[in-house]
View 1 (cartoon, protein in one colour):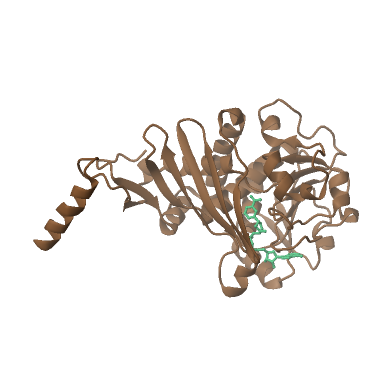
View 2 (cartoon, rainbow, N blue to C red):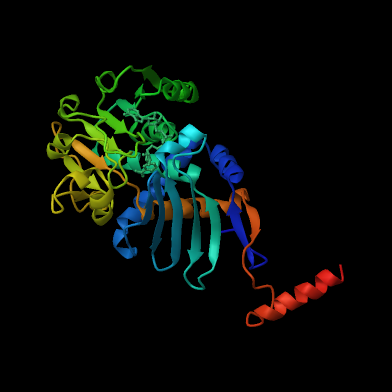
Length: 353
Ligand code: NAD
């Protein structure tokens, strides 16, 4: 926790500070440590206030608010999802968030969360993979090579020990970008010309595409026995990536079922279709992968507790790194009940120059 000599100053982690912080520790270490925070919070799942995110849909995308609280700290994330944005030079996913102190309700930290979301999504996927992917899996296919993809690759490398990534995107420019960014990072990289080619020999399949519509990135015939599917891109009503038949032959693991039934791949299934909650596997209450032939599917949509963990992770590193700016966010310079007087004193001070 940064020592705040002035209470009205709130640490602000800008995009620049976030990048410096991540580079200071190294991306893979951040992904692994962040996964540790998520794992810790998933183990105490029941101590959190939980609600499906509040989504405001428009023809081209969605803006969402994601709150949660553990009784001591409260957090929320503001995040968009606009698949058409990259055509205009904008991010598909852009976010910021706040961590607050429940004792007084004051914000403890404001942070950019565009980079942090990519990190927490990669960390959550890889954490799920550690419990669900076949033991000793070395090869992962990544279909969709946009903003999230490198974080997925490095997350699985750091947490599950994959050494080969097979890449496919309908846009070869995205695959070239991914190849360039991941070069020299200890992974064997294979560029593929189709989803079919990408999944050849892959024990883990990550789908992380962006489209406003229901899509079929993977068909049933492409998914063999024993594979783990990490489905990240279908995270909104009317936006899915997998053929329904894949769901029917998989054991499905989700974050918060109430939210995933609205937003995830399982929106294609009846409302009471049985799914398992990832936190119960992490807490040791239910088995993850139980045999080599089983197809496991992590139907990821992103849940508020992962963002809480990510903000907590960053906040815990501010004291050591000082990688934040000071934000004048709270109007409590003097007598708290004399807010109007504060305005008048400012006016007088401004008049005096
Ligand atoms: P992005 O726009 O940067 O990249 C998406 C890529 O998918 C693009 O390169 C595009 O060419 C490719 N693509 C689209 N259709 C394809 C298809 N049919 N086959 C192969 N490739 C295809 O987006 P991003 O920031 O990387 O996000 C990817 C997806 O992940 C989005 O849908 C986003 O909403 C979702 N997401 C989910 C979570 C989560 O927690 N589950 C978190 C962040 C983002």
